[in-house]
Image (cartoon, rainbow, N blue to C red; front, side, top):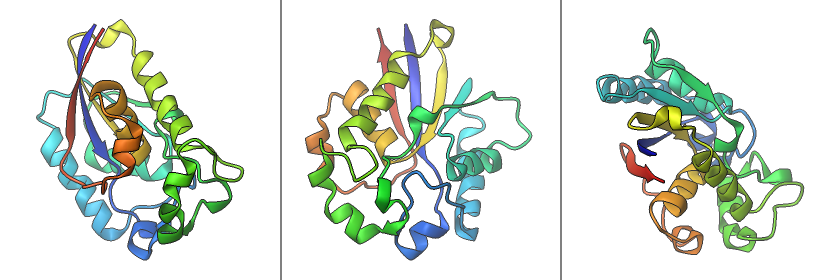
Length: 179
């Protein structure tokens, strides 16, 4: 099976703007985020996308709904594309939550999960893509953990390496799934 996978992050949220680490909380797009979501649609509507796989968290769903409103591209929600679960720190100050990120590489956040568990969840999603998508171009909309899972599984990068980098937002990342 060979598939092209395009990854885009959910759009800017109210939590992003005030410095909260949303984690597994739903989150809502900010006014600027809604504008960015529409721009995502303008970038990707004519990009040959055959299907959209989206985190089931509200901020990702809202991004896809605004970007692809009125199109016939199928949207499939998948919980495995969620952000890392910061447990008790979901919704906490982003500076504090992310400052201790490396401590949670393999040790789960209290009542949450580790980064490795989150990335393994995303890898499970990639490895379970059915042959129905062979030869297709799919869009995945998610979070930091989603991108890191794609980078680890399809980009050959280590989680340790990725944790040491700034997220570095951009207009999409492209991967090729071959198995």
